[in-house]
Structure formats: structure tokens, C-alpha cells
Amino acid sequence: EPEVTQTPSHQVTQMGQEVILRCVPISNHLYFYWYRQILGQKVEFLVSFYNNEISEKSEIFDDQFSVERPDGSNFTLKIRSTKLEDSAMYFCASRGGTVLNTEAFFGQGTRLTVV
Amino acid sequence: AQSVTQPDIHITVSEGASLELRCNYSYGATPYLFWYVQSPGQGLQLLLKYFSGDTLVQGIKGFEAEFKRSQSSFNLRKPSVHWSDAAEYFCAVGAIAAGNKLTFGGGTRVLVKP
Image (cartoon, rainbow over all chains, first blue to last red; front, side, top):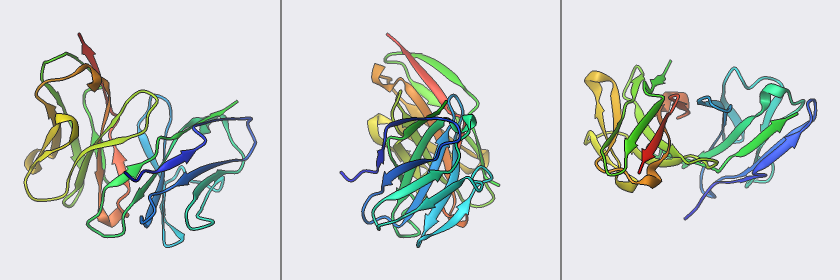
């Protein structure tokens, strides 16, 4: 069964460092998303990506964040200068290419710990 | 703006008993509704979804949910809970107009007593 794959599963980084979270979406999907879940809180939308550009982003997704689909298979989330409050589980999701195909498939997540 | 409320933060249920998790949503048009389950340390697994048509939808693991437009609700049910159902359950609403981003409720943590 096709699945969304995220690496690494856990990353620890020092405050102020740059991190890149990687995702391999399901191969024929066209819509890609990043969500995050701070410990004990709800899952929050960060950004959606379609046709090689951001289609929507939340208030959380400020200038410190960027996304890229560098090679047609990977989908990355970069945080330029991490803050303690960026510690969270980050989920990548992908969705098929039709309007009716609204089911998003989620990866297992990357737990980011900023120290 | 779309929003989802899950009124129950924790629910404890005995194994074999029935389970109902509440979800209320706010959205201006017909929503797409989802229930996801998250086991400890795991990702989000889709249990079931509602797009249109029959308001009672069946999902995996013996779960079902009923869409009630008049009550803006999409409650999740299971007739007989198994110990492996202990997890956190998230209701979510999505909409085409918003690029199908999902808005999640706060989640309900289910504990199963032997």
C-alpha cells in the first residue's frame, strides 16, 4: 500500500540552527501539506503546496519557514533559525489530483526537539 | 473560517463496551469530514470520511460515523471497543475552497479498561 514517508523520525537541534524535514509523498499525488502538533495540542495546518508553489499558508508559517519540492519526489520543510517553540511533531501529508479526491494521507511524523 | 470542536478531552471505556466520540464543526458550506486516529508515537491514520451521500459512513476497525447537518455534528461510534482502540482520535473538516487543508479538533484520548 502506498504511503507517505518522513525522515528523520526524530531530530534534535540547537536553537538558532537550520533544520530540514523531509517527506516523500505518494507518487501520483499532486497536493502536499505540512502540519504540526505541539505536544498536547491540536494538529495545526502550516502550508499547502500545489503545482510547485505555495497555495496557502497559515500565520504560523512565517519567514523562518520554507518548503520545496526539489526533485519531483521529495517535499521538504526548512526552518531557518529554530526556536524553542518550534519543538513539535511535524506531519507531512499528500493528496491525489482530483477535486473529489479529498483524502489526505499522513506520514508518521518527525519529532523535532529544539534545545 | 472552519472550526472543529471535540467536547470530550478524555473518555474511559471498558473493553467490550460501546464508544461514542463527539465532534461538532463550523463551516459555511457542505464540509468534508474525517476521523483520524493516532496511536502513541504514531502518525495519523484515517478511520473514515464523509463527502456526500449516505450520512452514515463505515470505516476501518469497526468504526462508523454519522453526519447530521442540522446539528453540525459528525460523531464517531464503535459498538464494542477492543483494548487496541486506546488512542487519540481527531475529527477534522476540510473544504475545497480552502485547498482542502484540514482543520482539526483538539482530539479525544480514549482509555480502555480491561
